[in-house]
Image (cartoon, helix red, strand yellow):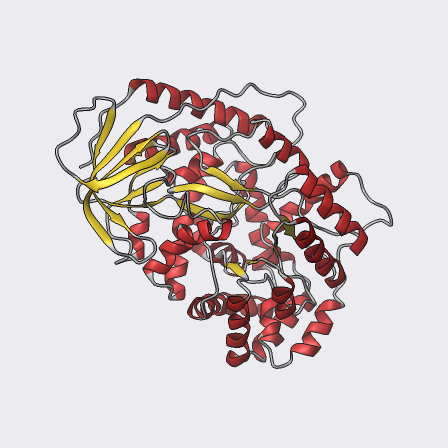
Length: 515
């Protein structure tokens, strides 16, 4: 059993941060008129995990009976456990029989934004997530980050990277417009460019301009775009295995015809003038309700094209495409839990998912409405969707075997859909056939490599951030052990399993009071 010497000052500071984080999350609205006062987060003191087995995320090798000493939010040293130090400033945690790995990184999430209910970040921490890649943003959120006004404290994962507004027909109506938008987002401090929806011409113009200003560009592979050309052009990461039919067309023996049909697919109709930013965001907010499950509202022609791509699938073509992605270092974030909630939305298990206890009532209503719409789809459409998910599991394994770099993510945020949990993503990756070490790497080491931050994250080693997950079993032996969380260290502060359970209970209770 784990024991630790409690630090009353740390507990009081932590409690204060929890309250301020929840308050900020409720009040931050993207362009807040009133700037809340933010209490600087305390710096962690000395913490030692004693008797723990350190797991190498690079090789899977185990180093048993070690003491991991941390100070100021960084790992100071790792050495065989001996007699505890006489330094009374060190908080010792008996981790005998436990395993320690870097904190999990959710590399596709939407945890920040005015539509997100308070407590999302705290819930992520209870899952072992100590860092996340925010996949949507705005100039206002970037400014809030610069000014230290984001609702992120020690009871939340670290924000690893963030874009500005995603590229859509509303803010990028032409190749010239998207080039100007990319330059503006660079000036606003975006870490990368996020592509959502555009024509092939605008897509490639955005990639070219992003390279010119020195920003990576990631997101959705656009309809009508050859995935090989996108990889060769420098599209840095493809999210959700496409999404839709985009990658599947690249694996089809009927690729030219399907690609031409997809390129002719009409985009969202927009007025013949640039809409103000706040109008764009109001429209996108309305669209967001459909994004709870895009499959439920898809155009029948798109579903039919996806089925034709399945019918003309070529394993050899898909392997060749995977080899191209590997050679070009075109990253993939499958977000299998997101795809599953779309294509298997009628699975009765979602109706009793434990995540429902953490979802606001309004979000549950929106999700149920989308699910009812999904269930009412024609039988042939449902058959295509149900088959699609099994194919996506197989595609994930094919990419892994080909050496395509991949990361773990959920596409969560806003507590909008049950089943989009990091722990569930590990289970789906296991179903896909990814070995335990590969899954561990997808949520730790690979994110560090993607961001170019292996000197500070991704491994348990001196000099790395003190963001750790303590497990009751060996995660390299069985990926299910990634779910057996005995404790979390975030920025040098230790959370026992009891602390994490209490944190989750507080969030659920606060949301329950709003129902």
